[in-house]
Image (cartoon, rainbow, N blue to C red; front, side, top):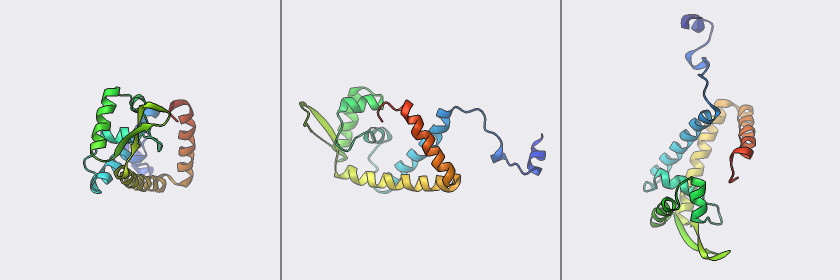
Length: 160
């Protein structure tokens, strides 16, 4: 069927079947869009000193604190790289290091006051993007997507 025939039949270029893209790649596109929106919102709110690498590591911090070795493992970087990024985040006031109550020799990286403020901006940007996606997909499709991705996380996220 020619493009003219498709257009006259009501199909548009946007409705053509996508090439066979992997599920991983199809999950990556919205992730990248979300990450970009969050970083833009952070910059607009005055958190312009945080880099994407720092933000990716920061996002892995648990509320009670996380050891650098755990951050490195989850971010799939060396302990030295994680330590360097934490040093930068600490200088920026986003995190602080505290003694680990479970091990006096270890230290935890915890979110500092400035980090909490950045999280509020990031969460707002995430909520706005999710609302836009829900308007685009509809409530049912969004709920089904969330359910499917949550189930997929059971076998893909060792840190869940």
